Picture 1 (cartoon, rainbow, N blue to C red):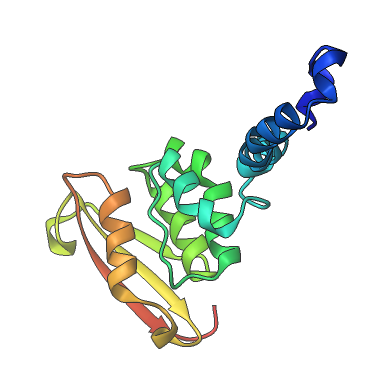
Picture 2 (cartoon, rainbow, N blue to C red):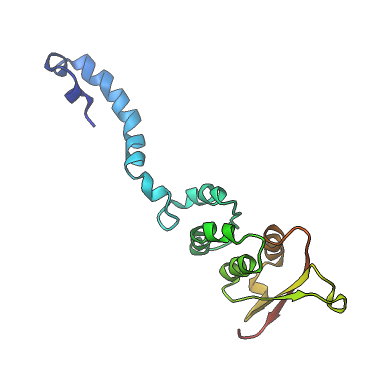
Length: 160
């Protein structure tokens, strides 16, 4: 942007004014570029990688830096819907599906013989169980499950 165009013509030819205004142009030009493209920063598919944690924080998601960029973008895209279902079986299942790439099985226990009410088991069957970080999965489950419940996590190998 050339600020000289906004001045009366008598000042446009002044060398001092031209140099003085160029300082502001140099400082503000990058900011103006960001503002012209600000809508891209709110799109998980287009925002720069460095903005993903900031965008995830808006919907209270924790991103794992070890996840692929595409998995992080997918999780943020689903963030509002996941937040809507937070604390439910559906929400937990969808979150784990995004993380693992497979549909987990969630078995709720109602009888004392099964561990009693307010207990459930998450079963994830993947070709290579070592490809999943159990600690991260437990962090996801603990964040998404109802506070008064407890769970068992089973990660097994097989084709699912």
